[in-house]
Amino acid sequence: MAAPGCRDHRVNGHSLKFCVDETGSTNVDVRLSTSSTSNLNWSMHLERFVNGKRTVIGTRDGFVRNNSASHRQFTGVGRQNASMRVTLLIAGQTLRSPTWTR
Image (cartoon, rainbow, N blue to C red; front, side, top):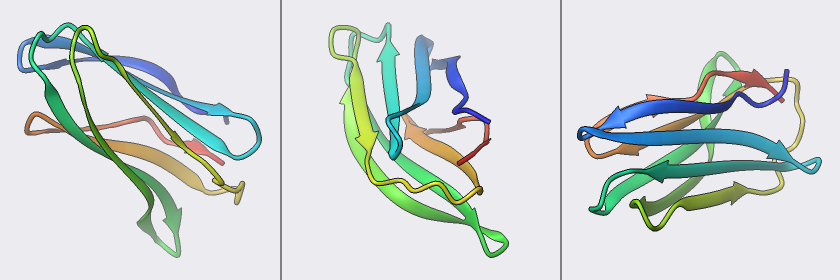
C-alpha cells in the first residue's frame, strides 16, 4: 500500500493540510500548509510497527504559517513490509496519518 496522501484538519480554527508521500525508494515526505497567520510550532514522528509496538524511527520539528509551508523528508527509510504512520503534534493537538505498509 502506498503512503496515504493528504488529509485536511482544523487547528486553532484554521485549516491545515497534512500530506504524507513516498518519494524514491527510501524517502518519506511530509508537507504541511495552513491558513493561520501565526506560527504553528510542530513536531512529527515517523513510526514503524515493530515487535508488537510502534517505534519512532525519525523525528522532525518546525513551524508552519500561511506564507511558510513546511516540507520535511525522512531519508533512508527501508522497506520492511511493516505498518507505518506519521504522528504530528501541533498547537496542542495530536494528528496521525492513516497507516500504510512499507
